[in-house]
Image (cartoon, rainbow, N blue to C red):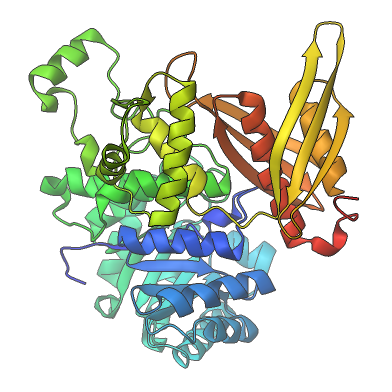
Length: 515
């Protein structure tokens, strides 16, 4: 890696997945990993192999599939079992890294680890050396480094490098640092650790004070050459530094930072949508870089300025990040060729079978609404691409609701395993609740709705509605998303997707679905 480049270390699949309600299946993690490889990230932290059999399986699957194209990393505490488990999960990757961590701050030493400084240093040396037995690419993190005494932090970092660490990550684990504080920490390490030039200095900043990106950039300015970040800033509590913000700050202000990245920036918005869809974490409208309003201009003076000269109010081009606005593009008389051309212009590459399904959805949608926008096309593609092989499918439903009427729903589902259809009915406190309860009766699953969000994909009374649900079933949280011009249908499809995930993951706990 050139000194003029910053290594982008993506931890969406590890730290990002630790966000409450953001857990992903192995198949979903593989889908995200594929997108991250296409995006051009240098290192993918695929998970914490010893945390669970599922985490081990995910890291192994990602390492086996993508380990020749980019570096795949597994996290491990300073414990023998952790490191051996990480080494086993990563064995199939040609490019692999083990990331070892141990807390160093006084508060962690006293209350969590109950270890003396000498024990911390000894454990660091021992376990970095152990990790080197599995790979020559070892990263060490002194957890809570931003609150660690500088002299002790220097001692730990120096010993980690001497033991074989090729990257030293300086985590602001609880988002406590400020940009100048963090800059001084990195500068102090560069000036006082004699072997610091033998390792890459990395950042890992949390966003508890809203400073994760600012702190990461301050560290780069101080000489750090790896940034650990996540898509959409996912992560524990308030999240991590947002990859898209760090990357575009370095690109847009290359005159100041004088470093770049290998990120294929036109894929940023697409990757953001994918991660949002899979995790169920909606991106706020005014989110920098990838938010719906990121390139919108409402004020007349702004609109006039942009029309005269884009740079008056835009410091980035929307196409540089793959932003999709609400351009009117197609109608019901648009043909297959025009539709395929627009799909390609929007940056999507999909196989012929998927394209055919999306085109059929487009034809159906074109009969329902007069004009179809870019955002509509993206929603149709998102609804079809990377769809899990759901067992149960919605055939039809009918609802009765209104003032003075008990909301009632009749639902018919098809079992994809035996192609049989099952019908049932239920009442609820509204038509959507009634539909959901009827599906629960058919599937033999009891679920509790934890979150329900609906938004308009584009403008107009005939706009598609995108529904996202989060439910608790069989002791775990599951997400589902769907779009339709009929909000009840979109809600039913989204709820059914979440129920399908629960059934697939815990088939033995389902009370005879369909009976």
